[in-house]
Figure 1 (cartoon, rainbow, N blue to C red):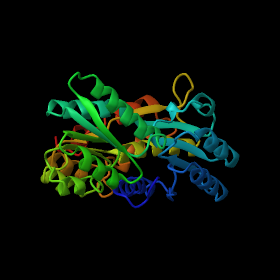
Figure 2: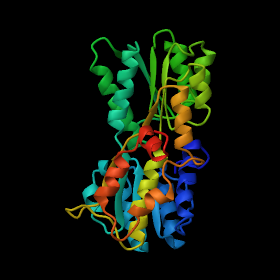
Figure 3: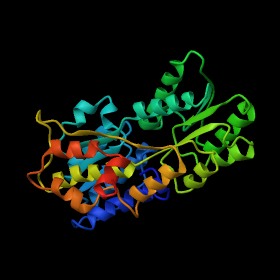
Figure 4: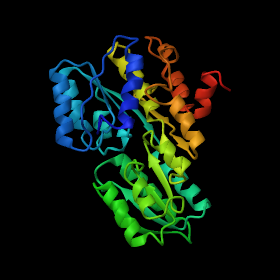
Length: 329
């Protein structure tokens, strides 16, 4: 995890624990993802301590090295959240017996959908916001997709880009210099804790559209007062599916495709467009309310479980899917 204290991490760890407790698995979190050397050291520490498997939520560009360490220690690794298949050396490490696959979201499609909805709601002048590029393939993909989609509209343009490790400072600069021009801020990161207050301070709450990835619970108030327009959540679900792949490998029945390659399961984010949507998401996808129960996942954690069935189950994920499974639809 790149952080263990944010809501994103709390929800993921809570959801994993709800499954692990039922099948004798304990989880330990380590910081990694934004610093390659720190990530490598964390994986080495897990190996030396005798851990059986790793869920890596930020594969980045060093997966080949991480898989090499895992092989050295006989430790399995699965990736979640970010698609590891974007790595230039994916072909080399994906064939390693200790790499068990990836579960990921289609960042390109989601980012373009958000830009399209912003445009349809009247946005023509966009600002891009987030971390500097080169830090995360996932966040870079979001920004690249947003740029591409904005450029498809002849009457839309990117006015400015605020890409900085100081996310709040970047938002303040965007608003100070271009606040009267910008209609929408597309961000590749969580924004309630960083962009929300600058928007209010600038008197732009509800006047400039704003999206947010991996929102914390404060997003509910941001929706209610009109400052937040879109929130993208639900990554705890793909971490749970990634654990199923990892568990099967650790138990000696690694899941493989018919052509003997490792699984690549593409799941969908939940896009919230209102306070009501976000409340529903909290009720369905959080540490307190995991999107999957152990009884729902257990059939896919057996020696004879079928990958195609797990894939179909995982790729059906949506708010409607959970409502049906909870008997509310």
